[in-house]
Image 1 (cartoon, helix red, strand yellow):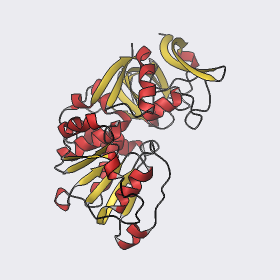
Image 2 (cartoon, helix red, strand yellow):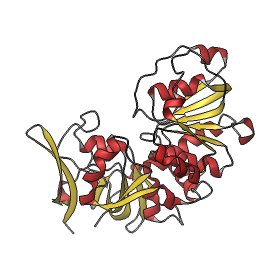
Image 3 (cartoon, helix red, strand yellow):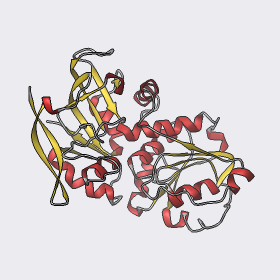
Image 4 (tube, helix red, strand yellow):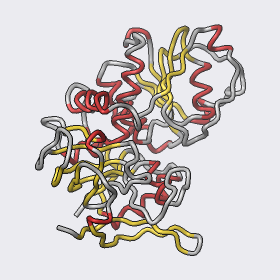
Length: 330
């Protein structure tokens, strides 16, 4: 098949317009492996790319989609064979390399991990980059020695993709989870995912201007940045750690060093884009096995075809998505 369908974002008269178009395989970038994509997903970064954010995507026209799962159709190098099921997330996929919102992608072999045995392709995209990032955040906290006996773990931005999956993983591992959300209507949903407590965002931020706050959390996963992260750091228990993976609220970190030098707290940076594939493969195996959320269907906001992506882009930019949106390729 030389022609295929893809969602293409183009610049027209200073505006960015997305439409499903016919493309040719020869237009794809050079790479070791040609993959027939079955599913992708919608992430905050995809919405930025689709809306013309030059910090994510520099050149247009472009096909977004930082996640893809599919089957190898051609390969010139590397460990994969025709017919292998693979996952591709991160690196440059969907940023400046045409991404998962097309029926085909061509990428370097080192960007790929095998689809774990027993994990359905569609379920892999319910998780996607969000699930991978959530797993890395949880792993970073566990590496500090965190265990459920030490107290509750805070999750900010809990209704988003990373936050909601983090809540589900931590709950499955036996942690008491305190989820922060600005969406009153989502409180019951977060509890169904395993949150022991749901804290209203405004209440959580009431005392954010103080240099130190009461010790409350044994650990934290921050998916928002800005005041959410600073408030979490100021209220960690002695020696506690916060995993930081998001900036949807703000990329700024405005606080004193007091929590670090008086309570010995730690700020752990988490990157799911450029880390080695070996680590990604380990995380995907955990997600497919003992860290698989108890009820994956609860995490789904919707499943859409390519022509349904645009309707969700504005929602995710405005923080109006609860959970994950799966993109089905024709």
